[in-house]
Image (cartoon, rainbow, N blue to C red; front, side, top):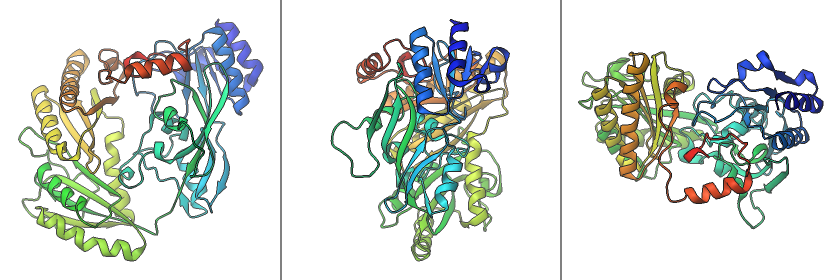
Length: 462
């Protein structure tokens, strides 16, 4: 199969856009070097390549920018990497309709730059997501803190074009927000991790670029106090675009020391009380200048009444620095063993989750860093240890499984969204399949009966 796969792929693309042998090594997925790496330039070439792979039984792994290839289980097989970086154009932008049609290989940063020239943007801000492709973001449905206001990419996609496992090209939805009736196929593909089809084009709805962006950063002594402020904000007429709680908890509910007042480096430069808490609540606001100005003082007042020990108003470079500090949770840790887990619970249970993370960290000798989109209850926990080898892996796995067990008891969603491959080979990064798994398995069997698309990487080994 190796020679035929490479030969037929070369006939479709030409040698200049195909890698094989040792040249394919940089595209290894979890240590598996593919037989070939193909870079098609059109939907027709994608379809032709998938048709060949389907006929030869070759496993296909879609690849955008490679930023999320550590999500999920290691693949069962990796024969053909389908790199979509050449499908990187804005096909159509209708500013009057606040819509755009784009190819899946365009980087989010490049798309935002193109849309920004007309005063619009795709309301998506995944941490460290500037280089990620739109197709990859759609396949994983990754979003950032401003999902509190705008939702996720699943909410923004109004039309989609995909290539199925056998090379058949299909589409769903349309180019305007008011769509045709029928099944919403967009939502089926978004978040499916490329296991049902390869996304090649997306129609998305846009928003005007906000005139002003700002934030209020408050320090609190505990997650409970920060939740009190969050709850007050949620029950007020205020309209924040994001609410993020950050800290590195210890077993006694505090946080290991860092920058002034315990705030993560890069957040806050205003006066700090001596007993200022180490938990930081970052409340984002944006819109017209008068709207932003009118929300600052009420936000300050609500946070102070909830027990904030310090407050800092952030704009411009200070806001960028604060968001960058939050984004460090998504950087590759320097610790020998680590895992980043994402749990989705009701917002009121986030303080308890922080307590659980602290307890598990203390029990297993780990550092547990937390960044929670507390307005939605979506919480990221980074577990790290300086212990290497099997000892370190055992500790991280034990803590991660503790988080998974807590999530199951709370009926909360869980996934180990990033970890070294050695660790992911030893533990299932997904939560246990739920009642809807039979439906998911049925869809996989219908859309990809030969099981060639990202085989084994999704929930339950789909």
